[in-house]
Image 1 (spheres, helix red, strand yellow):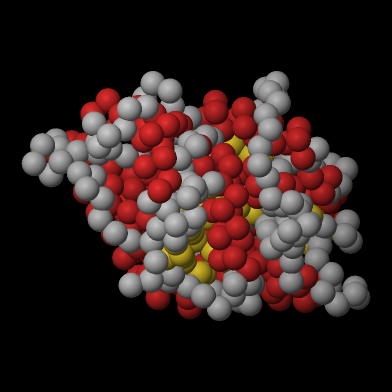
Image 2 (cartoon, helix red, strand yellow):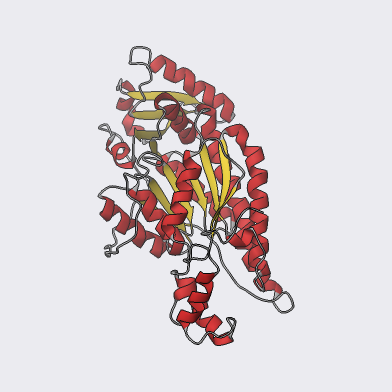
Length: 408
């Protein structure tokens, strides 16, 4: 049963009140001796069991297993017998590495996902101090799409530095692998895991969440960050470009939320008091129009509509759904690339009247912000931590714009 890992993780969260990691793998027939290990929790399910029936059976089996143990003690390992046959082995720990170490003699991990061994390169990053918000995401399991570069990379690095386990999901798998290796070496633990995903392909998104189930048993925070921009006048933009932007910035958020929501709903069956989060990285363009950039702004406006609608529906399962609407990342490649950046483009096209240099263009855009600078990854991550920490908020679109967008 594919959802067993999420149900088991939910049980352990309910017992401890803390995020846990559940690593699952096929259990080969030679491991029968594990069934006699008193530290191993065994539960029996049937293929035709609904998720609700499976949750009840797992609770009942745990009650028998824990009868002579300290109340609230989670098992270090578990075995699923499906239709009376050994099916899967689960290792349980506070984080990925401690779960990985929970391996009794005789267990195997055939077919498990493996981390890459690419050589990491050194890179300095502006990270939030772990002392600043030390417990908001510690040991929580997060997934970020478009995580291999740009603002996604900054979010991934910051979450890992604050103690989270981060799935770096990206169409650019080699970039995700490289970044995961860098983060793991920097953090001196397994803090990041690369995943390949095409957010515009429903089957690819579903496969990604199936990998999450096998690798950590579930999720606490899903960040839909992957996005694209192709500006153009409504009088001239090709429909192909409009659809491309809409597919990634709007439709993909629906697909991500669909499969993330299913996983988090399953987890909720055995951890009904545990709050989880789906967050869309939106834009200030989702709060106001964008001249000759209607495809982008329209998709972002639509994303906020999805956020509020999904928030109403998923609150029943303690899933919060919110959006962050950052201002322009003026230091990022989109703006500051020396050849293709928007500063160069705007200078060459005369979009900023009177500008003679790239510095003039930048100054013009900074002048539009009351705080006189662009948005940074640190600014965005602080908003993200607020969303996760704030239990009494859902369906919101939080501006991080330095005052460029204010209440109307």
